[in-house]
Length: 210
Image 1 (cartoon, rainbow, N blue to C red):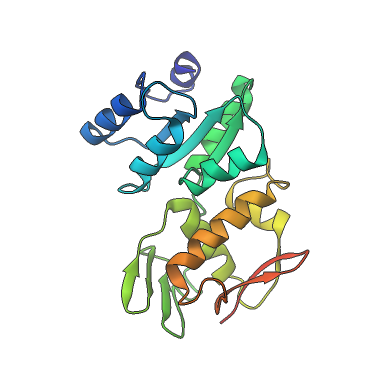
Image 2: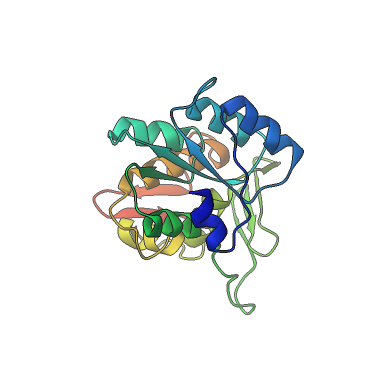
């Protein structure tokens, strides 16, 4: 993996345990972490949770397990994506690009600050406020919210959301959306179980209600 990444122009460092990964992460800034779910010491899930508690760095989990509950556990811990072993170098690189992907800023002529009740999002500065306080979103959470906010009151299908935020290779990973939408609701909704802004469109996708 290290050889593959370096050959593509990435700088890469490695760690043999979750504890070592956390220590290295505290010493240096990284753009992305490839994290094995099964490691010596604390496992990948706990390592992911620890890193995510203080950072928005892109995280991709690697594992030999392919059960949906394992995928959801990884995403719940804060991972942006999930790759099951064995995987090819092109697949790994595609997931790396997807995790690092950022949507371009919208046209300058469009509204850069959108308000709805006590919710406010600044698309230019990437700042979100709700209930009188600033909300910290991971990059993928922000991109997902930004896309929905940019298409207010319009049901956006699952596939369209996945391809817009993660990339054209995605479309079937509906569990990604369920987890990420739930995470965003916990941060911006007063009552996440009865959302005011992020609404589910049964069998279709999601809608942001202004």
